[in-house]
Image (cartoon, rainbow, N blue to C red):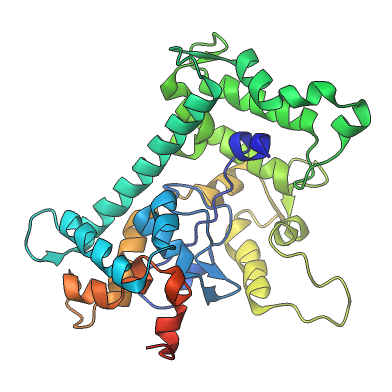
Length: 328
């Protein structure tokens, strides 16, 4: 549904990775904002998800293009990308060059996304987009719905009326001059609040509203776990190990004042960590995966040898076939 795709906050599923194969802080899971690299989770129930690396390295749209290529086509295109990443033409890709490339792909994704949505919601290409025009274009279909339908909850438990209210609040936060219209720059903040410092409070508030089911203004351990794990309703089912790890994370690290809940500041520290650079961590991870000689930098041959880690391919089941070594 357009309203869902266009308006809803991107709940960023960014997982922390570093040079070790299974780093200690890998347990940081859903909802961690700050330099969004992919809508994918890097680890799903402790299993590596290669789609995260593909989107982080290529950007979401380019990753979809690579998914349709043969292994030969993927290698050929990747070879050209490596030449662009190697900014000093030294013949090797350093961690800093790889990090700069990942940051570039992220900015490209955001710019392209904003341009698409600006064009869709502002077909006359006016300098500013008015809230009422935006609301009509995105939510105009509800004018033909009765009250029961309007009150019906969507997949995330929000009614259309609640969605409009949340979007209006985010709109007002992005509207720096308070004129009910957004410039292209302000519209960027509206669509990607995780990228704008002055929108941090909106990111935190929306996260708390999503998880705080009893609306008491804080997040309990049960609500924290329930946001990412729906199983275990019968007494005999065994809880996955990653869920137990998340319980420990909540108790030992998330709940800093040890009162049994996460308040607004604790949620902020969780989802918008101030001491972590995801692009840097992903660069370290990719070098770890492909650096066959252990010199902390990558030649083109090393990258092409591990092309499935970087770009994937539908022809090789997103690279998994190469891992199994059973199709070549």
